Every structure is written in structure tokens, then in C-alpha cells.
Length: 123
Image 1 (cartoon, helix red, strand yellow):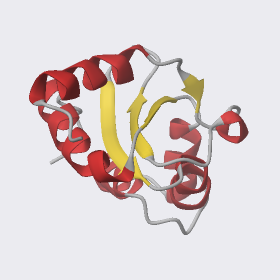
Image 2 (tube, helix red, strand yellow):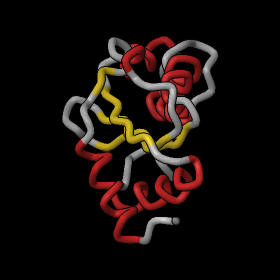
Image 3 (spheres, helix red, strand yellow):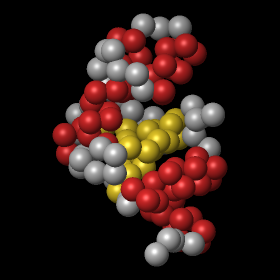
Image 4 (cartoon, rainbow, N blue to C red):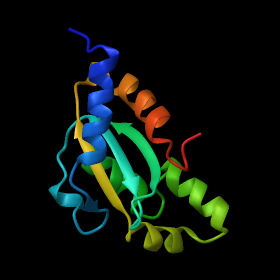
């Protein structure tokens, strides 16, 4: 059964309350699951929200290592005019919150969470 709008809003609130993990240090404790993730800085400012089939792989391969093509990393490089290595070092001080959900729900949950949480680097 597909969740109604109220249930999706509850999921967005649940995402914002999830435990915060340091992007670099805690990557291995994240599950290999489908869901939505929220990247925040030390001040808890919402930077980026995305969806993934495997959170651990998404962060390790595309965000935290040179050569990865994560949208947030591209936007930060352009905005800050810095090298990829400098951006990765800056990101290593950030946090991620993750909410697992069914694959059938992930796209709709991502769109609603972006609208509600208004992360700085989502278009």
C-alpha cells in the first residue's frame, strides 16, 4: 500500500531526527540499503538531500573520493573555486543522516523532503 501525504511528511520528520554520522569516519557503519540521505554541516544547515540504492557505496565512491561525480561535490567545487581535494576535506567535516525506505517510495520521499527541508545545494 502506498503511503499517503501525511505518512510521507512523518517520514521527512523522521529523516531530520536520524542519528548524524560523520561523512568520513562513520561511512562504514551506514547500511547498504535504499533510502534518502541528508548531508548537513556542523551547524546543522541542510546542504544536500538525495536518494540512493546503497548509501554506503554512494558516499564512498561518488562523494568522498577524487574522481567521484556526486552532484554536491560538483556544486561545491564550482561555488568555492577549489580543487576536488579541498572540497573533499571540507566535506569530511560534514554529517549525513539516512532513512531507509522501500524503493517504490524513495523518489517521492526525496522530492517531498527537498520541498520541506530546502537544502542549500538542491536545485
